[in-house]
Amino acid sequence: MSLQNKSIISIRDLKKEEIELILDKAEEMENKLKKKEPLYSLKNKILASLFFEPSTKTRLSFSAAMQKLGGSVIEIEYSTTVKNLVDKIKMIENYCDVILLRHPREGSARLAAEISKKPVINAGDGSNQHPTQTLIDLFTIRKLKGKIENLNVSLVGDLKYNAVMKSLFYALGIFKANITLASPPELQMSWENIEEVRDKFGVKIFQTNNIASAIEEADVLYVCGIKKENFLDVFEAEKIQKNFRITLDLLENAKEDLIILHPLPKEIEIDSKIDETKFSKYYEQANFGLPVRMAILSLVCE
Image (tube, rainbow, N blue to C red; front, side, top):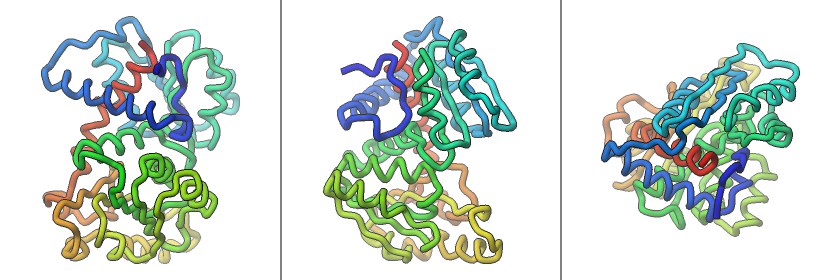
């Protein structure tokens, strides 16, 4: 099995075995980083980092990953969307071995992959997909819990517009986790997505607008923020944000070995007092970004 020259656009494009290959490679990368072994497998390879909207964490993480592997990075940022994405991709492909693309328009990464002679890695295309973050999430869960299958995983927050949640939801279906979806009615996961995952993978999916019930039986609590711009009424948005905030009180009935994850950076959705508790694993999760993205680049470019 090989991912050489394969574009990573959506978690849907990856078979379970391919995901496991990436996770195993990430484990290998993590061990090499700990031992401070020299890594030059991508020497003379170039990553073109093409961002049409800001995302400091993803951009820096991939840049560090490429340089750790001995490669180099061309960074290109645009403050606004450029009309002719096709021309940009056709030009940039001449100067690199792989393209990292972040674009606010859904489907932009797929379009880029279809026209590019070089593999494209989707660093987020609007509210559609964010596959590399999902691979980090899966690695974190497997690393900290020893498995993904049959775990009770609760997704809390914006399940309608958040690309990370959509990607992770599908991936949890692939690995047969039991999934609870907790969100305000206005931000529920689409019924089409729920039906697709339930019918395709036969997993148990529960829906609730009660955070306490989502926490009670959870092995993993994955939280994302709720953005005010998705509401017409700012005051209503603030009210919902407060109602979907994870606090210490809510964790009183949580499992002893519950882990809380978040793609970061977080705002008010998790009480800062939780940062120092045994439940908080989101900073550890962020640290796993480097070996996972090294694994992706290594498998795609070698």
